[in-house]
Length: 229
Image (tube, rainbow, N blue to C red; front, side, top):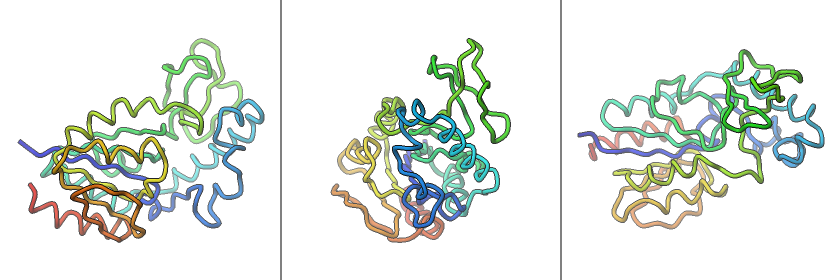
């Protein structure tokens, strides 16, 4: 039986694919204050701006491709039972071939009803427009967990981490909660690897830090995991 390998990924995972984040200097998100584009209040105050913001990000995503880090994680499925838990809203893990991906913060290529949270749809193309409605007639919104909203996928993520035989963190500062707290749900004695050029402030026994970007770091990680199959 393959060992259960659970991998938490963050913004640094997709950086080498050209996905820009709130915290990138000169990046797409920097021209906006987070409260203007990524909160429920922003949607109610200025839905046109919020919709344009996510349309721009979605359009950018269609121009991006998975990087060697994404591909490397997908290849681990040959030797491990791999579960990816990602803070990212892109679909690059899936496009690289990963078969089990849990999105904590939503998915950019999906939209949902503003009235019924369980009415979720794949968006055809990159543009969401006013007048695009769910089957009940309510306007659609980005299927994104905004700041100030609950993260319902955490209820699924925590048990996955508890069952992990090996836990890996790639490309996240571990500063954004509740996702950052997942590392503390690992069982005692479980090997933990953290791949990030800047060592995150995490304190847990058994952590090995690989201070590299995702692409190179995943390559190094794969060599180390060969000994743990």
